[in-house]
Image 1 (tube, rainbow, N blue to C red):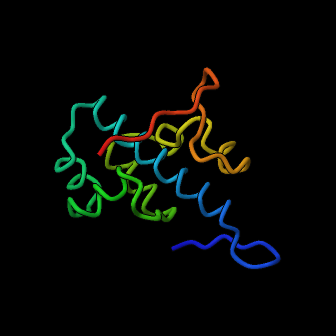
Image 2: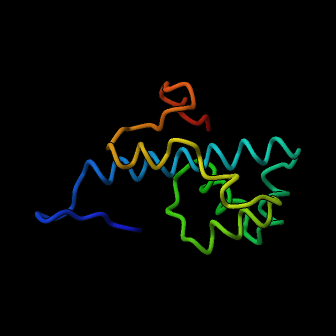
Image 3: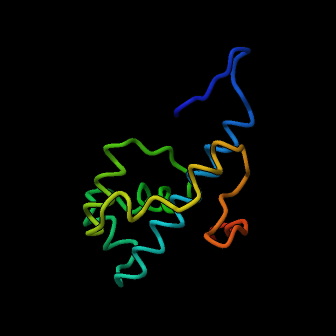
Length: 112
C-alpha cells in the first residue's frame, strides 16, 4: 500500500484523502464499464485480472499502481484520462473525504 507521510510521520488526513480517491476512481471505472455494456467478469478478463482483484479496484478497496491503472484503461478501451474521476485530484489535495462533481457537490459514495 502506498503510504503518505508528513514531517511528523503518517498523515491520517492524507491517508483518508487517498482512500477517498481510490473509491472515486473505482466508481469512475465502474461507470465507464457500465457505459460500454461490460459485466465485471468481462472487464476483469479484458484487463487480465481475476474477478476479485477487479472488483476490489471498482470498490476502491485496492491501492492501484500506474501499471494497473493503464491495464484497466486498456482493457476497457479507454484512455487513463477517461477513467480518472473529475475533481479527484482536488479532493486529495484538500483532504476532503469525497471528491466533488462538476457542479461542486460531493460525489456520491460508490455502491457495493
